[in-house]
Length: 305
Ligand SMILES: [Mg+2]
Image: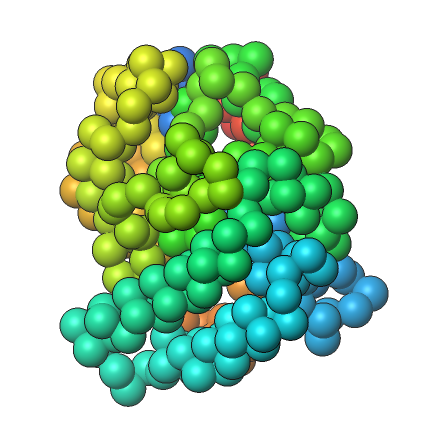
């Protein structure tokens, strides 16, 4: 497993190393036909920042719309103030999950409603916001998505962010890398049945209920989506990717023989030890999906050397 351990940004807790490498070996030998992904989107599939400007955070999926130049100033202002007010509470380690729950709901709904209230939100405008935003997928994230499609590996995106931004980014912003064949998005979706858009569809996904993915999937309408979910349910190995401890909840309610969790430690490097305890593999200050490309290649070839 020299190829894995020599990846420059990769860290594994020394006490768990043997167990984790064993799990990686199992996943590789079981091959692509037994694998599926569950992946967070913001700061996991996308870059948190550019390598050369680490102090500047790139927009999240909400940020893409919040920063859209077409929105009235007062709406942008309202949404910005919400971030200043609620984000520290989301990150506040002294608050329990139960305490955070209503606060998070208040945040998401008030920002979303302010944006919809402008009566300006149409799919075309959201598409434009996506295409002009500096938000970007990690380098080679598109490659992993395309390799997954080519090898019929279900790739389930689970996000408390804005699903339409995710959807339109993957479908209309270079590098285009969406496929109905193997991908689904469970996130906060707008009701696109009327224009301008007036409401979001239930359920609201936020950082406190980001679990029981298959239960949320029951609400997905399309046959393609149900086919992808059913294919995933039958598989025994799952790779989970996130950038936040809360993302580990995505495996709650799921049984799989081998679960490998990969966590991106994008900033606050003083948390390294905690990340190492929580995630199996930690990618520290990594801006690409290069490790995932290597790992997936090994799984497709069933070759762990
Ligand atoms: Mg994230």
